Amino acid sequence: MNRDLPEDSAPRSDCPRSPDLEMPRATAAGQVTVREDAPIRSLTRAMVKGVGVMVTTGVIARLFSLLSAPILTRLVGPSPYGILALIGTVSSLAASVALVGIDLAYARYFFAGRGDQPSAVESFCWRFALGLGLLFAVAAGIGWWRLIPSASAHRDLALMASLTTLVAVTSVMATTRQRIRGAYARIAMATLAGTGVGILVSLLLARFWRPDSWAMLSGTLAGSILSLGILGLPRVKFLLQKSNLDSGQRRGLLGLGMASMATTPMFWVISSADRWFLGLWVGAGGVGVYAFAASLGLSGMMINSAITTAWFPEVSREFEHSGECAPLNIARLWARLAGLHLVTWLAVTAAGGDVVRWLADSRFHGGANLIPWIAGGVFFSGIADLANTGLFLKKDLKPTALWWAAGATFNVAANALVIRSFGSMGAVIVNCLTFAIIAGGMVWSAQSRLYLPLPWGRLGVAALAALVAGSFLAPPWSESAWRSLLLKFPVGALTGGLLGWVLAPDWMRRIFLIQRSPSSV
View 1 (cartoon, rainbow, N blue to C red):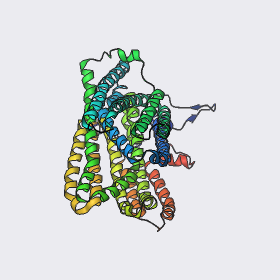
View 2: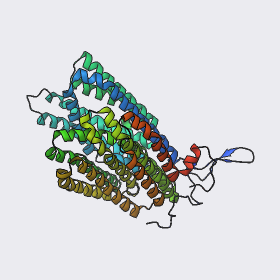
View 3: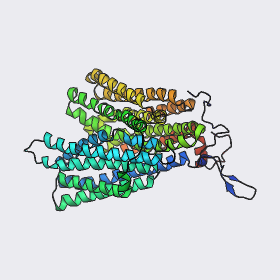
View 4: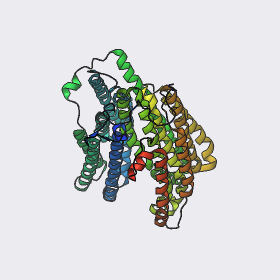
């Protein structure tokens, strides 16, 4: 490990901060200049822009779904939703296996080469993904046809299973292509247009054609194709030409991708085992309460997804272009993103129980106590994603696969032991501990391969402050859910501001228009 780096987050004199982290300097002539040795592209500015755009997009897309739900559910009923979910499961699983993590390898190796190598990497990844995607799309259709009873009216949706799989693979690659280019506004536009048009087409087809799963699947497919059109695809001529990568380079790409893909089935096991055991020992009613609480407690996954979308292409660019200063710049922003995860946990913990009492029937109110632990699992999942940074940059994701396998093993064993006696509360505690084990193990493994000078003291203080505040904010403060939320809001906002001062004091000084001192961290 590179232990000669300082233990705090303050940059060394020979490691300039990103342009947005260094105030412009005025010359005697009054001209504003930026240091010539600063990185050309600001890691922090790119991340703030990317995360902000993606979070906003996710919120708006969710609003689209909520606003259309009363009309669409009335038109089609519950069965088409079940079919849509089932085909979505088939296509997403087939697409994940078809990609074998090549999208992550694409994002990492694109910046590692010089000259024509990035283009060669892009060509290989696209040709590989589309070729294997077409194969698995056909397999998904055949699998649907064979598994669905011949007497079922849904057997003829095999074509839809194939098309949605192929579109899913292509969408992941097209999105990665734009992530590499930093085109987050374009990704947002594609997401919003695809979601909006998909919902609109589904509503029109259900109203004027046939109110069944065909209408919903056709709308979803139409929206996805529109998204692809906005994202853009490489030219056919580019896809047809060989990449000219040698066998060693291809093995490196595929090895990194396959190691990252190992987390997909492990995540599925961790996300599903609790429900299996609850269904076995608690019953369907308990699973329903648990699932509803989880739908709110998992709200922070939107932040996790937004950070992941922007983080890995940007840190890859920073690592390749900033040399010895890259670990310092990356560590500085790593800590601040961890702070964002803390604030997210605090917000969901404080509001989640009140939202359950506000939205749900009284039979679901028992799920309010589960939300802080569910949100805790989301927090540690986000830290695990950040911890993957060092392994990703060193192109060694084997420890990632091993820690996720260890987490999944612990999760299944612990759920089998505790759910029978402790029910849903035991399940959420096990879930939180599972992700904590994965996150801790991955931080340890990543730091041993690429040491990042993380400010552990500040992170510990911030985590303790969030935990204390969360313990007071989680219970209801009033019999009225709305009044409870209003009473908690100023306390939660002040705590969030405190976390900001601990982990990003210079950002907070800018927010409050306080002069930034040269020695600020």
